[in-house]
Amino acid sequence: MWSVTRPLLQECTLACYRLLSAMTQAVPPILSITPSRALVDEKFQVLVENLPPGCPVTLHSLHHSEDKDDWEAYGHYVSDHRGVVSVTEDLSFGGTYTGKEPMGLLWSMRPVPGSREGLRLRKINVCTPMLVNISVHSGHEDFRDRTPLASALAERWYMAPGVKRIDINKQGVQGTLFIPPGPGPFPTLLDMWGGGVGLLEYRSALLASRGYVSFSLDYLRSEHLSADVEFKYFETAFNIIRNHPQVIPDRVGILGISLGSMVAFNLTAYSTIIKPRCIVCISSNHYHPPGTTLKAGFKILSKHFHKAHFDENNYMSWRSFALDLIADPSNNVEVGRINCPMLLVNGCDDQNWPTVETAEEVSDALRHGSQTRGLGSTYGPRHPCLQAVY
Image 1 (cartoon, rainbow, N blue to C red):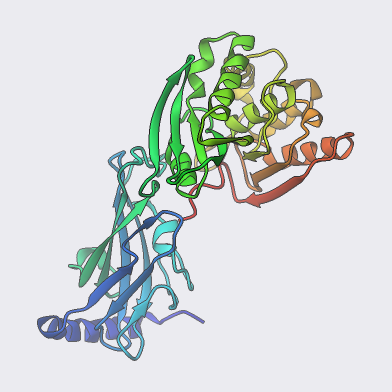
Image 2: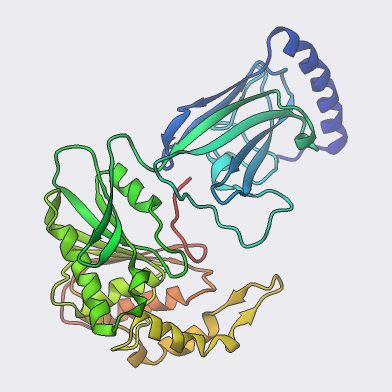
């Protein structure tokens, strides 16, 4: 339906290239991005005008990350009878995405060819925008070798104007607090990322941009603590935000991803101090042997690494041995003790942890419990799911 034969494409490309060469001397193509400055979860419109009708072109996005890696996406388009390409309305015939994908130039980004392996696109400094250069090139093949016909810069922000970013180092607790603009008080989230990533702020910054106080907790620093002191670290963190003057005390929730979801389950089930309004667990994990610290729990886990499976790309999967671990109820948080609403967001093809099975076990435990709670589940592709939308 969307295919274009190569001989026809080459003929059109050559003809359009000649037309474009002539047109750029008179009325050059114009590429516009609307809005050019926006939050990362807001849609934009990319429009190219002043092209010859029926002209094959490639729209290309390029981002140089704070980790010094280049990421790109591109789509192949053909201009309409007016000489216009609208990424919002038109079909991409190929590239890193196909079909009508208004935000394909962002969500389909991948490392440029020749990049180092194992990369992850992330924002480190949320006080600056993610800069994306979008350009239009003639033709569908070898477009990188051609000078762009036109280009424009998009600013994608995690932190809206007026959001306050505050470093927290109080009562032994460390992290970053984000407060929305306005008088408040606001609903609030204790935000915990997974293991191995350190303190990330971009989710909390975006939550604050949408009206939530959010505290991104640096909880991996607690690994040297004993189990009871580690538990108190989280309770202290919860109290710090609950007692903040800009926070509605009885509307504090917990948001955890991967290892952070394990902490969320554990705290909500066993703490007499932490009583969240709700919890959201992404790539959920309820494995937490009783009386162990996070570090001790990981040591137990590491003893099973020799059972890990490696696929044809040499990617390691923990799924098989993790299933054996959670099959023993004594290794898991007693989620039946939790009496607040929960939302579980998991990847159906998660090879890091059996998140779907975790969700099923949580659902069964709540179904057979005596408390009345709400449970919602939704599923994405893999681990971790639910990063920024675009």
